[in-house]
Image 1 (cartoon, rainbow, N blue to C red):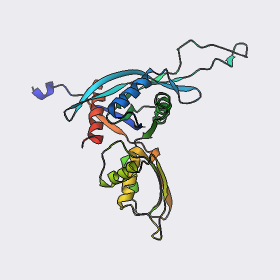
Image 2 (spheres, rainbow, N blue to C red):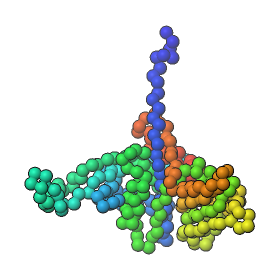
Image 3 (cartoon, rainbow, N blue to C red):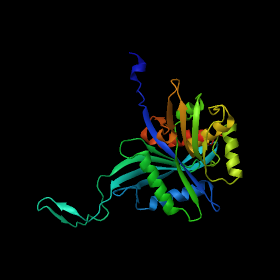
Image 4 (cartoon, rainbow, N blue to C red):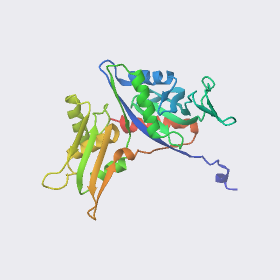
Length: 291
């Protein structure tokens, strides 16, 4: 008998996540401790509405520690839950066809649906497991509303979708870029190449919290996507802004690319379900903090 047949096959779990970049701009606090304080305060909130009748809450929050480059870093994982928010007025009684007032049970809400999340303070990135129940847009609405509640009045925050690297590369590699509109902010010490770092430092040193600009070509007809300026702006936009490009194809027709319509998909490979949060931590820290 072949001994190899007796070996148990390792089951591989492929999980996919979308992510957002949370940036706090404050004169009084920064770093891991600020983001740890923020996530704990968000978890203490009852809920935040994302529409007239929908709300999201952090249902469970677990704290873990990961090791990166010999240092210990706290990260969080758990469940976020979306549910329907009921109004007690104007309920239809189908038996007598009357409209009446009904008080729903206290603290009970229908249509609850979950997804997993991981939050890494050291990289200030928040990830949700992709499913058809809670969208990335819903997450961004929730985080924006929650942050607006918990941050101090003299602080500024931004919640930005982590956008597809492939779509950024498509713009950079285009030969006939006719127009580019970008909205960007400087990073919180994210990694980048020389072009990205140069733009980042220019924004930071000038205290530019947000730069919104439209770039149009001169007599050359098309913008030069090989320039370090355009490369740097687009690479910052991936995690710290948005970009909209108008590109002429080989048939002479113009098409548009909106980067915020193309979120980055993070695929995490694990042997056990309980390993997924730590594997996300390792992957994200390696991507954003491996100097």
